[in-house]
Image 1 (cartoon, helix red, strand yellow):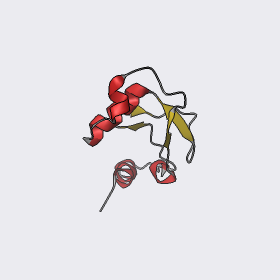
Image 2 (cartoon, helix red, strand yellow; image 1 turned 120 degrees about the vertical axis):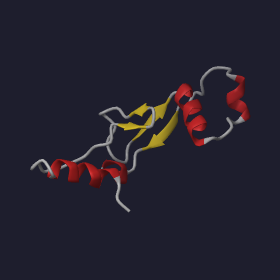
Image 3 (spheres, helix red, strand yellow; image 1 turned 135 degrees about the vertical axis):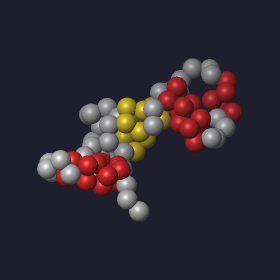
Length: 85
């Protein structure tokens, strides 16, 4: 029932410190650039897309297996507001 945010807050509270804000800087092996704010999107590279599929235990779509260059439109990921609480 308790998440890491609460765990971090309680850890610092035990040392007499108060946490005013926590920010997610990494999700798995992906570092979230500091310029990406809650609700914004950022294109991910093909390499990151492959890693996301691997982490989720999914097979890549056929078009990705061919590796014939990058898509003209980058894939985008959404950073949810809950991730930054």
